[in-house]
Image 1 (cartoon, helix red, strand yellow):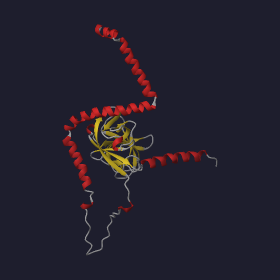
Image 2: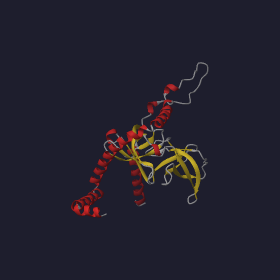
Image 3: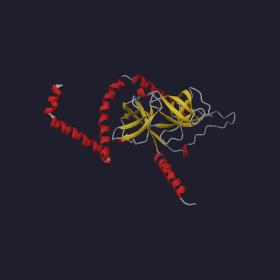
Image 4: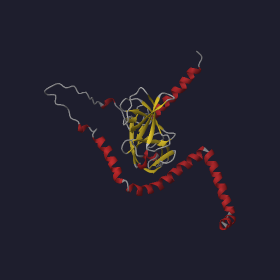
Length: 292
């Protein structure tokens, strides 16, 4: 203890300087948007590069499991290739094909980019993970992120040149629009901050038939996620007596303890949809205020 006090006494000038310098920087980055944005970008870049090196060692021990997940996803995609289908023989009887395939009127709405998770947390109330793709690779805020087996994982919330910070579904302020595969009814899947293996699906009416094991998917009303990606399966059925809705405990399909390979999905219509939504709200408010 005596040596500690002697050390402080000997270097009190430089210690005081460092403390004051730290306080000054704290005020600068917290009350100046420009400097705060620059600091977050540099911090993301530095931590991203450090985490990339650490992740190389960690990846080695999980390669087999990750390869199995990637293989399952690739297998599903290969089954969708046109060469897996053949035309029926209509030389004997007339058959009307019920599955029409006319791509002339279709357009690409979503585009996917691969990425690697270089940092991940699951034990906090507000969890994030970081990926090795950033603005230089076309990543933007609000893009959806799915795991290697096609399960919803999070939303991009901050981007530097070569890395991006993703708000995990295991974040008490995050949510995803989700629907029941069997009925199509949709609600909101959120994390309650407790068990990282489960989400809570809300706003499903009691009139809907629900069973344990039912599949929960991303819904068609999300601006971020394309419809049809796995969120999880129902493991427990409860009720919210306050509003007469279900409170469904959903076991997550994504393994947040072992996120490695992911896909970042961009909704190419996102800006138009968000703009229309905002303009509609303004328009409705103006109509309410205008005299009749």
